[in-house]
Structures are given as structure tokens and as C-alpha cells.
Image (cartoon, rainbow, N blue to C red):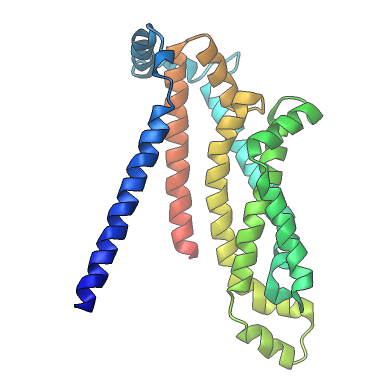
Length: 263
């Protein structure tokens, strides 16, 4: 009898949750201004899809100007440099924030706060700040991705350090090893595969982010994409989108295969 009552209460809570979710969706969709759709929306949508399915293949390579290949390589270079910079910079912050690398939480606590503070700002906000500081171009994109990734990579690295096996480090400590020897022979061999895996994963994210940052002037393929969208050159938009899809797919396959070997 008690089980039956418990099951009845669970069903009531479940239906209550369903009703609340339905009400939330109704409230959200009710706020959409449907009268804001233009009369030419259907025609413009048709033109967009027509351009996407008939891309401008001549834009793939232009001997005397900016083309798809140069834009994709620029985006790839921005993401690589941003990832390398963030990986190097975040290492001391990761060891600072790891609780098992310090004697008290008064030391590791501020490190976690710093990494959380850096993660607060989206890369697009940082890109706008760096564009004002150093001017539009790829350098601003590299700085934005490099600084923003420090927060996330530092947190992931710190978690990897905290989850490692303390046995080898304790054995070396008992044998009289220095902190540098413990770090080199006990800590790094355990955390390095995880570090490399997280770095590859972050590189995949940065590659997508670099495309978006280019649309606000931070270099890469996003710059010609926003120009093509502004001029409604849908054929060029189609070939740029196709190039982005192909590049990201290839990078994802390569990165995924490498991460499987590392983990």
C-alpha cells in the first residue's frame, strides 16, 4: 500500500512538472512578435537557399586577392595560436587553483576565483575590447581566444590535477625528492594525457569561435562572410558556409582520433 502511495505521489509530481514546462513554453512563444515578419521573408529565404545550393566555386581560389582558402587558413591559424597561448598561460593558474598542490585552501581558493573571473567574459566581448586596443584583424582574434580560453582550460587542468593518484607523489616525497622532481616524475606523467585531450577539445571550440569573431572584425573567414551577407551575395555565402563545414568536420575527425589515443 505504501509503495502504491509513493508511486501515486511520483506521478503527480511528474505531471506537475510537465504542466509547468508546457506553461513556460506557452509563455515564451507568446512573447514572439509574429507581426515583425516581413512580406518578403519567403522570397529572401528562397534566395538564400538557392545561393547555398549553388555556391560560387570561383571564390575557392583567387590568384590576386582574398579567397576562401586564405580565409580558412587565417581562421585555422587564429584558433591554433589562441589555443597555444592559452595552454601555456593557463598552466601556472591550473597548479595554483588545484587544491592538492597547496597546503591550505587559502592558496588554491584565489586561483579558482581568478579562473572563474576570466571565464565570465565571452570571447566576443574580449574581441571587441582587443579590436579597440590593437585594431581590427587577426591579432585581436588571437588575443581574444587566447585570454578567454585560459579560464576554461585552467579549470579543466586544475580538475585533472586534483583527480590524479597521490601515491607516486607521496612515494617520491618519502624518498626525499624535491618539489620539482615530484612535479616532473609523479604529476606530469599522470596529467599530461588529460591536458593534451582538453587542449584538442578547446581547439575545436576555438575554431568555431574564430569564425564568429571574424564577423566583428577579428580576422578570418568571418570577415568575407559578413560582407557577402551584407551585399546579399548568396552564391558566395554558400561557398563560404560549405568551406567552414568541411574544415570543421575534418578538424573534428582528426581531433577525435587523437583524443581517443590519448585517453
